[in-house]
Amino acid sequence: MHLTLRAKKTSRVNKTKSKIISAALKLFNRDGLVNVRLQHIADEAFVSVGNLAYHYPNKEAILKTIYEDLTKKQNELMTEYRIVPLFENIDRLFLHTFELQQTYIFFYLDTLEILRAYPSIGETHRTRIQTQIIQIKNILDFNVSRAALIVEPMENTYEKLAAQIWMSIDFYLIQHAVSAKEKIEVANFRSAIWNLFIPYFTKMGKQEYQQMLKNPYKFYF
Image (tube, rainbow, N blue to C red):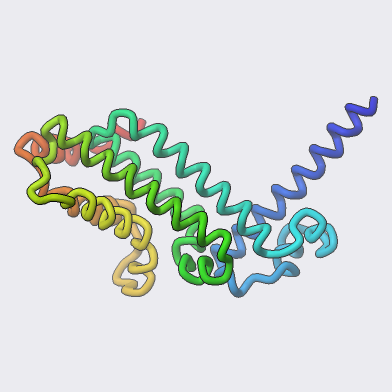
C-alpha cells in the first residue's frame, strides 16, 4: 500500500517536472532565455510559482536540466553513428543534429549569453566542446584510413578542420539568424558542413559523395 502511494506521488512529481521543463523549453525557444521569468514558465505549465520553485528553485536549475537533456541526446547520436562513420552515416548525423538544434534552438542562439550568465554550465560546455572536436577528428581519421579522404597534407590539418566543422555546426543557426538571407533548410545546413570535407576527398570519396547525393532518401529509413 505504502509503495503504491509512493509510486503515485513519484509519478505526479515527474509529470509536474516534465510539464515545467516542456513549458520552459517552449518559452526559451520562442522568446529567448533572458526574456523568460519563472512566472512565465509557471503560467505556461499551469502550476503555481511556489510549486515550480519547489522542483526548480531558479531558472538556472531549469536550464541545467534542459542542457542535460540536450547533451544526452547528442551523446546518443554520436554513439549511433560514430561506430562506422561512412559518408551516408555522417550525412544522417548532420540531419539529426539539425533536428536536435531546432528542438533546442534557444541554446544555439544564446550560447555566449548562457555561458557568461551560468559559469557552471559554461565550464561543462567548454569541456564538452573539446570532446566533440575529438569525435569529429576520429571521424576524419576513419575516412582517411579507408581512403575516402586524403592523407593529412600538413601536420595538424585535420585537427584544425575538426574545429572548423564543429564551429560550422554549432554556430550555423546564429549566423543564419544574423544574415537572414533565406528560410533555414536542412539541405543548406548539410551542404555547408560537407563543403568543408570536399577539398579533402579522394577519387573514391568524390564518387561516394556523388552517389549519396543521387540517392539521399534511402539513408533515412
